[in-house]
Image (cartoon, rainbow, N blue to C red; front, side):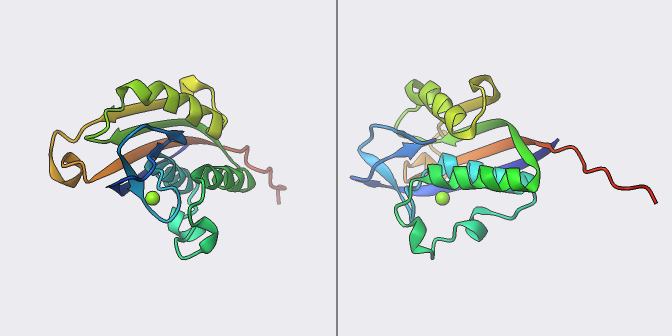
Length: 165
Ligand code: MG
């Protein structure tokens, strides 16, 4: 088994959509970024790439590439899963913590979990979503942005049998 850690944060501004884990959350403030600025999916992509030893999101999906401008981050997740499969890994489990002062995410956690399970191709019981405030501390605590931490576990494919010499 391999594990990987991911982190992402984006600023919040009025009048922007807020997407977390592929779910649109009603909010007067939304995240700003090159793609759809979904911190949950970005943290998960980094966690998966990390677990597989494949670098980071900036290497595969650079924000200088117009292809990712305004992109649905679900595409990044699909491409990452594809890359894992090609490298001989399979996603086993995912756990995320969303840090947001506002909006309160408690009522949305289950929907995010279901959507993540769908996107990641996992049974919902192997996906966990936690949400918390930052207790008013720092930029996240002042509601200037949203952050997410993600942890994933991968199964390694059976090692190829090598001929005995
Ligand atoms: Mg990001």
